[in-house]
Length: 132
Image 1 (cartoon, one colour):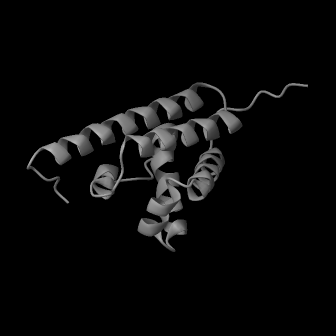
Image 2 (cartoon, one colour; image 1 turned 90 degrees about the vertical axis):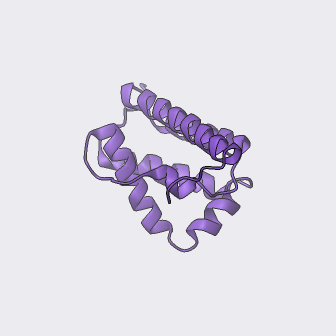
């Protein structure tokens, strides 16, 4: 029997990825307190934004506009948070998908994590503040 998983090709695939990933985040002892404090009871709104974000990146559907970094600029997050986040994200992708888009999703998440960490470090060590 072939147990090979499909790639991320549809809106339903993106929703599966996002929903399962954020279930893991909400259960993670390091990440849950930060996400739950910031998002509160607005999880449905956040998930809708994340569906649009990942659809835009992976499916070439213009479903998201905005600047994700600014929403994270003042959060109390460090490298360990990013490492945990990327570990959960990659595990979620690997549980459900395989193929070019699955690989691209993990690559994009890793680049986003690196970029956010770089910017956060920069603003912590320089007097300039991000435009919020």
